[in-house]
Length: 347
Image 1 (spheres, rainbow, N blue to C red):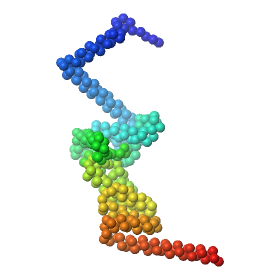
Image 2 (cartoon, one colour):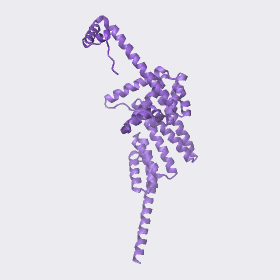
Image 3 (cartoon, one colour):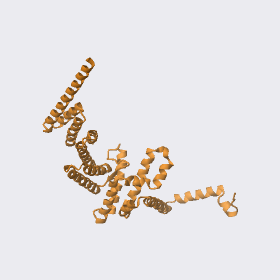
């Protein structure tokens, strides 16, 4: 159905009249005395747009929370009381959804539907350490150890550091989509939680409670996999703790003669490049694991690496003797088997 303007309205929207209105507005805007009024109007428009965006994001967050498991939603309640943490949750959900979309670009609308239905937020909350750290931030706010302004400033500084790092070629520590760059106060609390889990794991290990020890070590690993330090020194501390707990996990695997898993953990610890002390422990532990796998040459090569770092380490001579003895025994066994086979063929 077509409709047509008639009378004064038609005259107002005629082409020549629209052009006249545009010229009049440009002349009005060009007058210096009208500049403050225009700036005020622009500021009001920007503020209204920001408020609308925040309302839309809050509505999306509320929808996502409503579709969480009731127990998770209840645990999240203290976090939602903080405006800054609510905004952080929105960012986390958005980042997770963006990561999902990048991982599966052909899914298109499916990824958008997942984010809208709470999938982005659930992707973070699947790791209980994320929820624990958010709740710890909420406790710090309630206890007065951290103010909303301080947390907001820290997050703003983080965003600026990321932008500067990207402009400088990534010289600053960067958080992956499944990680978060924490302010110093929260990073210390996260590492304290990590150490608490490791200490509990150490007690279980000494009591030969391998399953319990592994569970606590894996929780500790989840913390350091999740957090990123804002400075190089802070990130070095995170990396050192990650290497240490990986070697703890390797020890549990070795105690259960799971040699391949132990070697893999030692490989990860070495990849952390957490310093000579951690590297020495990793080479020695991997040598023992390779001995358990009957990979004698690999075990000897690991010992050579360890000796380069600490030539007089007391464990190296005994371990090398054990490797060489096992290697000779394996060779002798192979020779006997070969001789027996040749005799059977000759008879």
